[in-house]
Amino acid sequence: MLAALAAHPLHTTLTQLDFTAADRSVRLTVRGFSDDLHAALGGDLTDSAAARYLRSTVRLDDADGHPLPLAWCGLQRSDGVVWLCLRGVAPADARGVKVRIGVLFELYADQINIVQTSRDGRRGGALLFTRGDPPRPVP
Picture 1 (cartoon, rainbow, N blue to C red):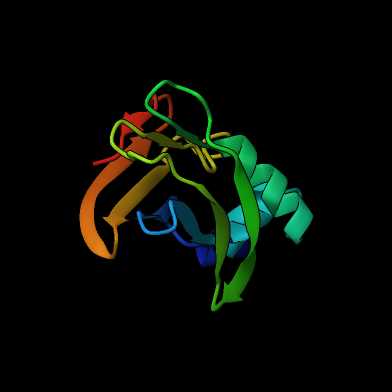
Picture 2: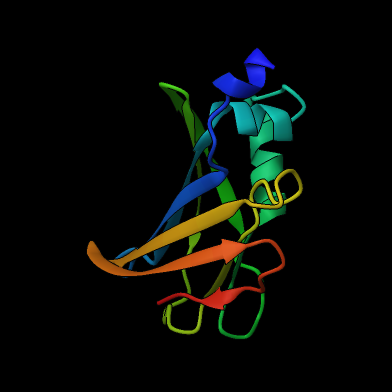
């Protein structure tokens, strides 16, 4: 009972999705609560386990629906949250790219994943994902 009271009441992640035209790069940084990510990874919050998990729950597709290959770029822990990072090569024209962030949907029915986008350092739009949502165009 005490553990349940100490747990945070929100089930949410925040993803920053950044496109840079000059080097055709894309970077996804997902912030989640440490306890939620520990639960999703069976207590194994290591780089290899986190990379596997993130690649299985994050989808980024080009305009033709082909998945963009994403490489692991690490994790950082800070005050009860964990930052997970993936990066890849963006299509020459990033218009039409679709994203889906399905992190923690397998654990929490009320999970909400927020995505903020930017292009070349300029703030784009935001997306909100709940369980069962399909990939959506990046604003």
